[in-house]
Amino acid sequence: MQFKSTVISNQEVSPGYFRMRMTAPPELAGSQPGQFIMVRVRDAIDPLLRRPFGIFDVGVAESEFPGLGAATYLEMLYKVVGKGTEALSGYHHGDHVDVIAPLGAGFDLGDPEEEKILVGGGIGIAPLYYLAKTLVQHSRVRFFLGGRTRDDILCVTEFERLGVETYVSTDDGTLGDRGLVTEVMERHIRENRSRKTLYACGPMPMLKAVAEIAQRTATPCQVSLEAYMACGMGACLGCVVKGKEHSDETPDYRCVCKDGPVFAFDQLKWV
Ligand SMILES: Cc1cc2nc3c(=O)[nH]c(=O)nc-3n(C[C@H](O)[C@H](O)[C@H](O)COP(=O)(O)OP(=O)(O)OC[C@H]3O[C@@H](n4cnc5c(N)ncnc54)[C@H](O)[C@@H]3O)c2cc1C
Ligand code: FES
Image (cartoon, rainbow, N blue to C red; front, top):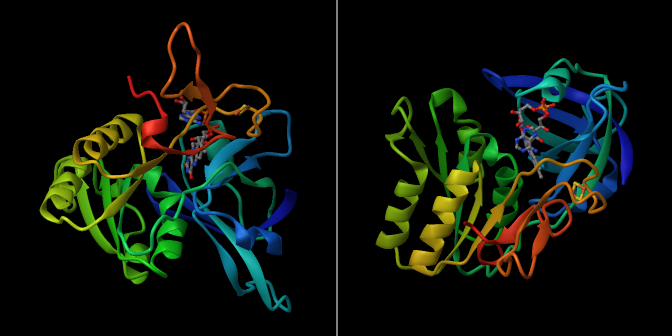
């Protein structure tokens, strides 16, 4: 669905990281955790292509605009890395953004009886908040959050407020444990024998490490991938990754935008 959204707020939550809240049509409240949106960052030729972002949160709340009553909102959490995100960071309350949403295949919520382990690296936490908010309704949820330094650790309080047990680690030790988030998470998996599913989003080296841990510990695991996207709808094949059966003789490609962005880790080729 394509719609014009009005910006409610656009706050810098840590240096270079912004959280934008905007209006959305009521149908969007039914989005699946892990689905994404394509945003036209400017009403101009440059940048031409829409930019993909995860759904950080979506729901219904009393509207910030007078007289509107309860209304659907959509939130994204983004890091300024280039032209498009720089343009977004300049948006203010009342500005309009053109959005296509919801897109792609989201997370499978699995068996409510098992423990859910969420792993996020840096801005990779973006699609995990709405997932956590959905999962806590039925399951115990733990969240392992890693970043290079303390400025890359975002929204811990928001996750804790949901009732999620949160573990923080940074590469330089400026917040939480020093070291890789995947090491802390693997320790937890080995020390706690209950049935679990892993959900991960973050940089590719982190996702590879999570997939290896899932393999070693025989833990079901879903990963949310990022790729360069042009159309966001399966038409341009600009976003393909290799599927598990891929070889030079039998190509097996999956579109991140249409088959994903969420995949079971064992559906992908990791080398
Ligand atoms: C399904 C999906 C969900 C995403 N969700 C989020 C999110 O919730 N929050 C967020 O901050 N970002 C998210 N991203 C990444 C985001 O789309 C890019 O950071 C953004 O498009 C960059 O646009 P730009 O014009 O600012 O940067 P550009 O000027 O286009 O590029 C600047 C730098 O960012 C890198 N880059 C650009 N696009 C991507 C990409 N798609 N994947 C990896 N690296 C890229 C480029 O290599 C370059 O180094 C997501 C990407 C995908 C595919
Ligand atoms: S972005 Fe065009 S096919 Fe995925």
